[in-house]
View 1 (cartoon, rainbow, N blue to C red):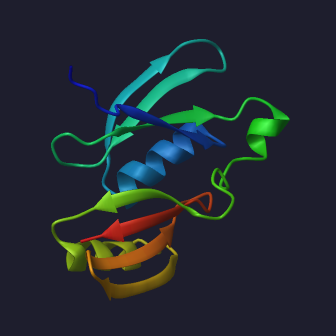
View 2: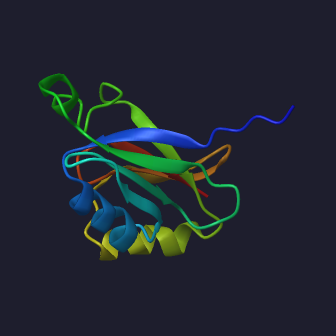
Length: 127
């Protein structure tokens, strides 16, 4: 058997602003954007590199879902982005005006910093 994690749903306020942020600011690739109905789309983005898990950008449709935008994990780091060029990606975060919440610091497992996405979800950049 071969199992792998393919998609992680990320609740967003707006499809187009989320696509723009992830593709323009982080350099992710738009894999798919399929209209499913008047209000729902299947939107997948992923970082560069082979074997990357894709983010399913899921537009919040109810008040409860809207309350989770930017806080899917209660303030904990939600997603972990590994890089083979930490300094370049750190410089890109700064150049793109992305909020760096903590770090960078040197840990046993490498360099790490915490940054916030457009809605405030926390990410680790690890290199």
